[in-house]
Every structure is written in structure tokens, then in C-alpha cells.
Length: 334
Image (cartoon, rainbow, N blue to C red):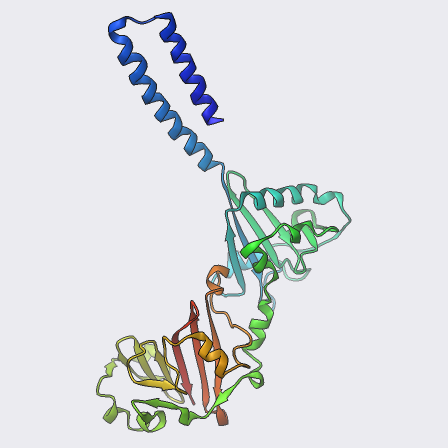
């Protein structure tokens, strides 16, 4: 469209030249100079128009409902944005966005049923998914947990997507997002019996066992600096830091945070910076499911963690992964 306009403008100016409507001495300036100026301005205008015509898709999935919480994912996003009950994904795929808009437009032709869910009202059915379109076009699709019903909450109606057009519309990372088993990741946090475990003796600092090191911490920790603590820290007694690493002494627990591979700590011969594959080989049960701690699916795919327990209820170890490497390790000793 823009190119056609530019061509039309150029043809018009050439006609003006042919009819010699301007004096010879100003024709060069009027025609050639202004032609280039207007074409450039028109091209910028067209580029701006094309940019404005793009839309953006933000998808939300409710993965961990709160007791007596909102019945709609919209309520969680609006009133509980930091509760981490939902995850998000984003896309600029214009074809996908147009397909979703078309699906919503034609949804009312299918089989319908009553669906009750009002904002800030307890009870009713739950809307687990929301697809928000912004930009040149603004609209929202509400979808059930199983991607079968297109919901119109204001009308208290849900329409069956008989041919699964909604689910089939997605490809790539957005397809992964709507099919990802987030519930497995949540369950993995609670089913401790399905984790690998190691003895506390497998933890060491510069060849010294972790227990011996911590029991005589102040004598051994020549490179750790005490961070001043006060009542604001709750049950924390003391915090010591060394670069990006830290050791926190609680009343009934010690927390060790490791991110520097060169401080001398080894957790069953594993340290920050090691490959994720080393963990997978050593701990097949614990690494079966990736546990999530981010809200954006784009981050979840590359940042997650695994938990290994310490035998005899001595505590646990969390290995945080980033881009297939161990980014940091947190050790909790009871």
C-alpha cells in the first residue's frame, strides 16, 4: 500500500515536469529536491503505520489456585500479581493473533452451556487461562483448563471448541506453553520420597567436612565477613558473606548459598558452573521434573531448579540451573 502511494506520487511529479508548469530555473529545486524530501517523509509515515498495525499476545495460565481465591485468572493477575499462582508467555505472531480473534468471533456458533464466574466473587467455575491481545487490536480470550471451552464471563456462557481449533492454532514456544505440565513441577516440591539423597558427609569446604567447618566456623572462615544483623532479620542470628557466596545462621538451621565455583565448596563433588548433565547423571530421580521459580515461560525454559535431600532428615540442597549450567546452589542444614 505504501509503495503504491510512493509510486503514484513520483508519477504525478513527473507529469508536472512534462507539462513544464514551473520555470526552468526553479524546476530542479522544486521537483527533484521536494520529490526526495516527500518520498522520505512518506516512507517514514508508512513504516510508522505498519508498526502501529502490529498486535501483541500475552498468555496467562493459572497453575496453583488459592483457597477462596478469585474464580478467574484475571483476578489473580489483578489482585495477586506477586503470589506466583500463574505463569505467562508472550508472542508477536500476527498470524496466531488473527487466528485467535477469528476463533473467538465464530465461537458462539458452537454448543454452549452456562458458566458462572464473576470478578471478586467466591464460588462458581474457574477460568484457568486468559489470552490478552494488545496493540492495534485489543481483545481477550478466556479458556478453560483443558482448552475445550471458550468462555464469555460477562454473558455467563461457555462455547465448546468442537474441532479443537484453539489448541491447533499454536506452534513453537506457545504450543509448549499451553501443553506444559506445570502441575508436575508443583507436585515435585512436595513429594520428597521421590528425590535422591546424599549423606551430609558429602559436603566439604577446602577438604574439610561441612560439619567440622561449621562447628568451628569462626576459626575456619578467614575469608567470610560478618554482616551486621538486627531484629529485622527475624530468627537470623548472623550472616557471613564472601563475594557472592553467603552463610546464614538461623536459630535452628544453617543456609549456605554458593555461586562462585572457586571458593572451595564441593557438594558431592559438584560446584557452581558445572554442567546440568552432571546432575542428571548423578541424581536421576531428583532431576526427573524441573521445578519452577519464575513466572515467564521464556525464563522457565532456561531457569529452574532441582532438590536433593540430605539423609537422616539433615536438610536439603537446591541446585538452580540457568542455560544448562548450575548457576547457584543452596544448602539447608537442619
